[in-house]
Length: 518
Image (tube, rainbow, N blue to C red; front, side, top):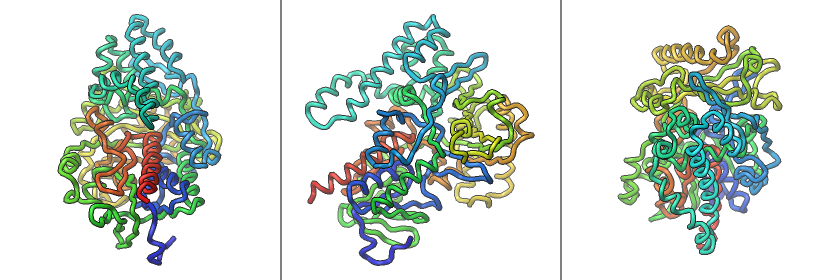
């Protein structure tokens, strides 16, 4: 689609980036009758929601499971409010165990329902009865606090929410490790409770305690996978935007957010095209937005310092496998596997945080074709897909940051082949004989994340999710420049639902502010 006339280049709102935060922001604005332009730098919409195809196999680099998709879930409510709930269907993962946590000599399946999980852990750790009671009480308090805080609209709701402040203030600066150490003694149980830390990108000793509790609650109401994969979610949003009269452009990287005096006035793309709007919502990384698109000279000193001191999250290695093995017969289910070399999760992460590749037996493994056996898009009949993820430092790959795909040279390809061999050995713990039955294999590195998701340093979660970089210390929705709004992983945190919520909030706020100024 091309936009030629000056009138066509004027919009009410421009959204930068089409990750789930940007998609939600754009559709929120369009649903409210505003003229919106969504600009995506890449060849395809979606950011980490962008799937890729290899022969008859489809892979989802950034979507492994989603919470809050039940009848009253936060994501369901967003889809309903935007008029696309009927366009995205979800399959619930096995309620008796959607996450399989594996340590040497011990494993447990995390089920749907906090009480059910509590009883399952109590059966294995009866000596930790008191600690488990305290832990699940904290989970319950977090579960009550977040909706109350998020629903503040006036004095009455603020007073009602204030009863949760002592709990939140007590732990807002705590790590998850500090919280666990204060109530749990058994090292194995600590490891189990912190095992999904890969969803945060930090070990318990560095991860935000409140975020970690929120993450557990997020899935305890059930874990889901979209029928048709991430493509189904992305396409529902893009079609919704266009149906509501919005414009969505690919291959349109923004190089500058334009200013008129002390407020935004539009954007300029790398090809020189300019688009005008009094409101810009950026789904790009907040540091990139402020430093590169706004320019540090236009920022207050406090924000300039914040962009300089912000630490980005860890990067990842992702291996995507198509196979003609029946992985279900091999023992796999639709559960995600969290495999650890030992119970000391902080020690497992230490390699990555030092800039080294992690142990081979530190990984996440899942089979999307078992999660979505309905659509038929994941793999050919009788075949399956596997997705292997491990966290990784950016440093070993930094020299290839500015190179193009397929043109990174022999050293890069050699490193990939060596890592593929190591990772296949790890997977064969669960799928014996896999390497003789591979039909498709792709390995993504931290620079793959830079190329396809514009992720600084290959980070998979935006700014690091440590206590002093989470709410209220993260970047705000309302930007430092009048007319600028932020959404995505820099605001509420990483993940499909937090980013979608941030986009929904940004879209509503932008439209409401525009109305109040009329």
